[in-house]
Length: 332
Image 1 (tube, rainbow, N blue to C red):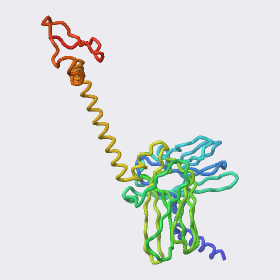
Image 2 (cartoon, rainbow, N blue to C red):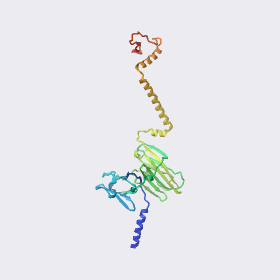
Image 3 (cartoon, one colour):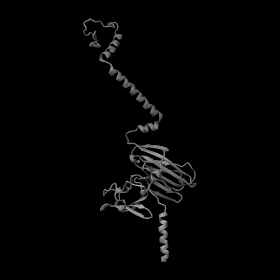
Image 4 (tube, helix red, strand yellow):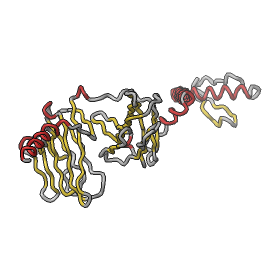
């Protein structure tokens, strides 16, 4: 019996590292990078420990609200807690001068009261292995405070086997939800934002609902399908949450050419008006007077001649007319 127990223990040691690891976030390796770990609930965090997952877990750092934090010797002077206030649920770990040796899986493991353990797994990949989302297939614009639902439907009519939703950012990709429909399992990521979704056998399309959106929810969202035939499809959507004041981009998006024509017309009228005022400002006071007088003279040709008389003395000559009450004409 002792020999059997020993053999089982050896078998476990060699097979455990081969188990498939599910991760919540993929981070692009950079010299200065952050592994985000934010506990989304209001429970008290009693202790947190960061591990690097190898053949066994290697402790990186540990933090206790009462006793503060400790960075393990192998990571000293290379990592720090970005937000180490005692009351915060943000235990993000930041690397500086990171290298290829820091590629791998990391675990942010929390002890909370009263709900117990909570874990988030982060995968760090080389920069050339980081996935590019590509151009979006569709766009949506919303004001803050709305409940937004993103929906996608595969082109293939085959039975769906896997469905996933991700949020794509320049330096990281967060898994929102992952469904294995063939085994009836769903995995909800440790994304710090509340996300509602569906995951049921025989589903024809997938959706995620983001309640009470804010500006931080803007970005690219990717929906992925895997059919029972093995075919895979992905769709990328861009969500833009406005500030609630600037509505011009939304108007142009909806009205298209009509909105653009209106803008061009407004600009044209503004330019013409500006040039006309500019020409008027460049005219001298006497030039404006002569234009006004000539128009008046045309209306009152029988009252006084078009060319005013001159006394030859070089004095100002005035026009005795109600419209021009002793306005100087010009020096002769």
